[in-house]
Image 1 (cartoon, rainbow, N blue to C red):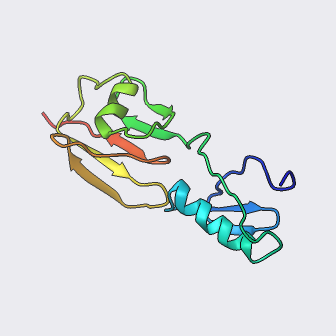
Image 2 (cartoon, helix red, strand yellow; image 1 turned 120 degrees about the vertical axis):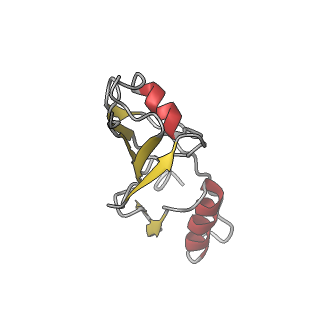
Length: 135
């Protein structure tokens, strides 16, 4: 339907607003799950078997700071890890503690510290902090 076809952005509360559907929770859902949720909302109306297609056109950024060469905002790509984020930021400074990283998930104020000898996945909106080592 041309009245509802378009690009919609997930807001800070994790919802999207679509004409004829209203506000619907998108955070935590896969594209297929979101398609089903939108179709279920639409099937309550005139179309009995609505066709819904959801594609992700872009992700929110990640943030890397602390003891990296070029701290800042970087584009998110699916599959990124903390080590990938460090590489995006130009690598470590000479003062960096290369054994651990602080990670604050989007929407949280709690920083968790992870050892860097394992692959730690990151998601859009995450903040990665590389601490200074103590000599």
